Image 1 (tube, rainbow, N blue to C red):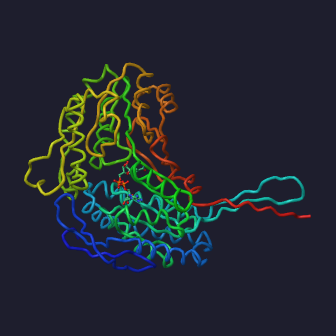
Image 2: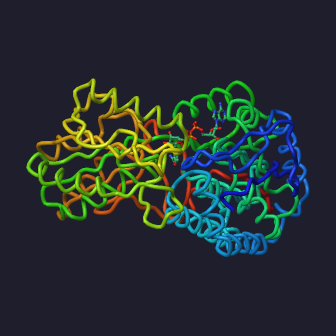
Length: 484
Ligand code: NAD
């Protein structure tokens, strides 16, 4: 599959549709072209929205017995499980991540569909006690057509994270994957169709964010927008909604997440967790543990063990079994990370290891970069403040609890935080004091379809995952009935 050139179209109204122009999709581990997809235009966005509007106007999906709607989503989950290895292979070949990680992503996506399949017939309204002889209640209705704009770092998983609850609530969907990684989103729509989604309920258009994403966001036929992407894109989306057509939106944006290691922590676990948090998916993660805050008394011991572990991470094509670290997603992304390596050095941070392009012959064609650790980072440095989105961690030290929390909170982002301690009071105090949407104690990173993926500060607005997310995919209608 990885060597054969695949031809894809948009997936609109239940069928593949060619675009006027195409884009070549590359394997970031080798540079080889693996597929061609349409380079969508505003007209393609309009066609997808029209198809979704027609499907919403037809009561077949939104008025379907909700238990039956759940069965369709459950069937989709089963099809994803049945095709998990093929999907993971496509993801690895397109995005670069190790196959093991891609397989976990695909299975997580299937579990997300399972979770929301079970929620379809539990989206209840409520009755409200009001004065007089009246019945007063709420209905929770689908919004209509929802637009989903996905990033390239977890293409399949993050697309499913918002598509599944949208469908569960009875909406019809237009999904725009990132232009670099569109392949598995198209497969999701095909499998959805096979599972029994009526035509036009799940549409996928591929192409650049600027033209296509922008058109979807401002479209008068779109009733809700769900973006997972950078803060910059989030700001553009908010502006576009404000300027064109007001509608609800959810923004899941970036992070500069701290892993705070207290002196009583189990150092072996902390080292492993910090390596996973910093270098999984080559560090291209909104919830990467890109800042490591160490109590000054454990700095040297931790750093020695951490450096040894990071230097042992095996780099290679994601399709090779032993690979821990794949390439960066594109030449542009590697260049951007290399720029941060220069910035960090210039600011006075000490580059302990990595940050250079490996010389190995078999890695030559890909966008590989050796995993880097910066030590002696201070909170004012750009490598402590900005999302690098690559295999780079910034190590800092703190003197006591208050200093740890102050430094952990001293960024504009507020997505995720790790705390390493055996002390219950320290753990729960930190969980309370950290200005983030999610805190994890003694493991990193971890989340589940049934738990909220929440954010604070510049990391976003709204919630994905869990039953809470369903609020973003439904609107409440109040009904008053005079009885007597
Ligand atoms: P990006 O913002 O460049 O692109 C995200 C998506 O938005 C892509 O599909 C892109 O084509 C589209 N887009 C770009 N400009 C647009 C516009 N003006 N209007 C509408 N759509 C537009 O992000 P990326 O580089 O693909 O992904 C990396 C970013 O995503 C990082 O900042 C990362 O932290 C963030 N992210 C956040 C989460 C989360 O859950 N909080 C998860 C994963 C990634």
